Image (tube, rainbow, N blue to C red; front, side, top):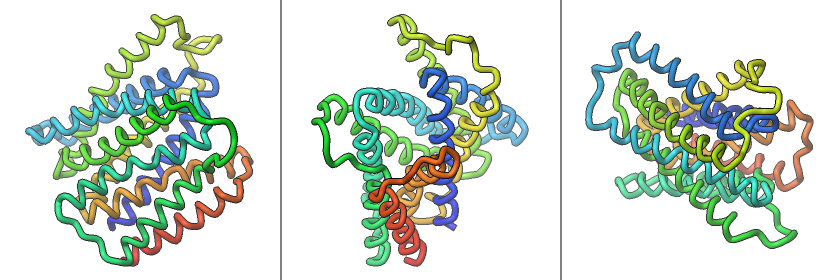
Length: 285
């Protein structure tokens, strides 16, 4: 069950990233984040009220608040890194954040078996290669590397925090609602600051109403991915759940291949294959 929910997390996050990437071709990235997460907050609010999730409020929600503060910072750093440096460097380097939840799991006493250790190593290598690492070309700015690392460890920290934010299904809905409730104003402040610096918040033709279904999908898929990851981390070793959940760049690359007819480089195809082998080893272990 851990492998199933963790792989569902990768699928949802990968598709959300793919959809978000398409949307940011016409709409500023911060606007995409704020609008999609606002839709997610509205839907989660209805779910929390309908399920009586407020009864699950407790000290654990501070983990959700922390995740809501860290998440937008990580995302902003990631987008900034993508703007400054080549995706072939930023994308694979961004996966090192998996070290945070894996480290937490080991600190809490988890000891994966030999097969799982091999699976973790193979899967992580596969994810890095699937990002198409740029091995040649002009030197990458230190600022790009620093921003990418901050984003990576920020995403990994969100992984770890959200896994501690709830222990029941109703509590999970409430934790995700609180996380997004913190993320939206944080992202809104970043968007306001961006506009104050003279950057556009909307495309030239105004608010992208036609993109609203896609924005809703991105926001809700991101929320659902957080939910499936929490379930995976609670049902099995965090070390396994975190690594399998970090396979989302493979999903994004395959979605680009399927929908946009983007050709996978040899290194990316090899990475996808290794990620699959690592997944099998983790599930078998």
